[in-house]
Amino acid sequence: MSKLTPSSLFDEAKRKLKEVFGYDSFRPKQAEVIRQVLEHKDSLALMPTGGGKSICYQIPALVFEGCTVVVSPLIALMKDQVDGLRENGIAAAALNSGLPSDEATEIRKAFCRGDLKLLYISPERLVFEIENLLSRGNVSLFAIDEAHCISQWGHDFRPEYTQLFKLRETFPHVPILALTATADAITREDILQQLRIPEENLVLDSFDRKNLSLDVRLNYKKQSKLDEIAEFIQDRSGESGIIYCLSRNSTEKVAEDLSKRGIKATAYHAGMTSEARAKIQEDFIYDRTKVICATIAFGMGIDKSNIRFVIHYNTPKNMEGFYQEIGRAGRDGLPADTLLFYSDSDIVQLAKFAQDSKDPQQRHLQLEKLARIQHYATSLVCRRRILLGYFGEVMEKDCGNCDICNHPPRRFNGTILAQKALSAIVRTKEQENANMIIDILRGSQRAEILAKGYDKIKTFGVGAATPADKWQAYIQQMIHLGCLTMSYTDKKTLRITEFGKQVLFGEKEIQLALITEQAVTSSRKASTATPKVSVRLSSKDNLEGSDATLFEALRIHRRNLADAANVPPYVIFSDKVLLGMVQERPSSLKDMANIPGIGVQKLQRYGQSFLDIIKGD
Figure 1 (cartoon, rainbow, N blue to C red):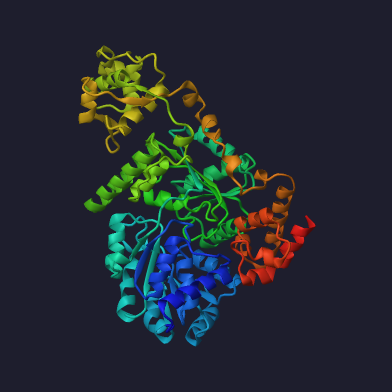
Figure 2 (cartoon, one colour; figure 1 turned 120 degrees about the horizontal axis):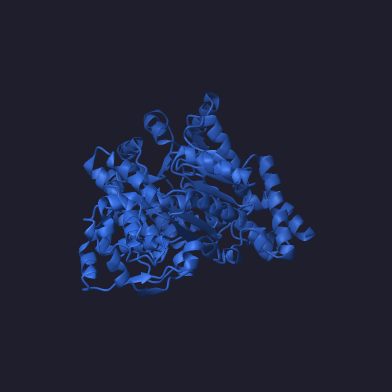
């Protein structure tokens, strides 16, 4: 370890930030984490995806003597980060099962010689290497990425992570920095306890990703959903995006449908060979494939900064996974869009999965988490306020960048309408689902209703003037407002709550959001009316004249350089850096050095060639 004071070390950290990464200052929480690390304190940092977690250990690695060991669960992440570090002139390597033995031997020798500043390693390999390699080198810091994998309460628990406590036993004087983008309160406590990190060393950043728009569509039928997705992607032609699906079969069908519509999309799932998955992921990272239809196995650890949209074809099973997945969009800080398709049938299927858990505590937790994602999707409250509230962060104002804020509902006194539905539910002894209740209210003569005698009850036909799709929307609101609950494990039957009884008997009133004819029959058009394009600066379509021409020329040049270096294009420069070049039009290398994100190494290597394009524009 360096013998400099923490204050001197932090000054050196700021110098390295500018010299290597091209930024003038740390973000506030980055600075807090780095100060703790430089003081050799064990720490847990919770920062959003795209919030700059890697800087929190890469900068100390450059300041400290010795090598920082980064524990990472995925080979893709290791390669991504090593490529980026090497482009910035930093000696980095990764030890994983995919390496040829001779290459692994050379990396081990480099570590023992002290030639590496960062060594990435999987948790499985780490346990073996504690005695066989790490004890023979000078380890300055252990950084544990995706630290939520440590906890059995986390959404991606991995048993091999539970062995990481051995680091503290074997290396008592080496600081440990755990990092994650997704951990609720119970998961945070578990991580702190397992790694023996003092609670006061928890650094909690805001989970708010302001550049992400949040949009939800409810209960779309399959064909309408595919139409919507195709239109959504066509509006973002040439941009990279991920579509998450619940099953392997869905990934293939969605990719096939989009391909028939002229949208080049590729399926990705665990049923493919490892070679096929690696090729698909590489094509996506290198911008050869723009759209991936994938199960949730895809994306964790991908550092691709220019993903402009994330779509959830199916309802996610919890808020942590949803937040992590949408966080893969807009990592460069430019605007990006997220779209979630919610359906009751998905909730039913996910509830059945949760019920299969043999551990009662886990089963209850999974069902509770599922209820929270349902709350998020069906609410008429600002989406971002609900999302941040889940992670314990209070947002006092609406965000202005979600579908609820962009299309605020008109409300009306819905007490009488609600009483009709509640009465029908009571008279069917709370044994029927929403579809049956709606058919009763509308006076349907189908055989099942007649067989059960529901055509004889008092509320039969009292809601005939309200279309079925509107009734569906109003009943969903009643569930969200606490009048009703839906039993997802018992045929989706509706039950009346205590508040619902008060509404039924006129003791309480209820305000419902007005469902207009346009909202029901043309919700797709209404939702896409959001002025997304006018605020997005990630595409040439949002730039005019010579700006658009220059931006595209810079992207082509970046792609050529990336191909020659065999690295992803964003490793050369991010879209945000290219946009800075377009806006600033630097005329010299000195001017270019002032654009955030351009460090000394990249300025020397690539600066002049980009200047030539700017001057020739």
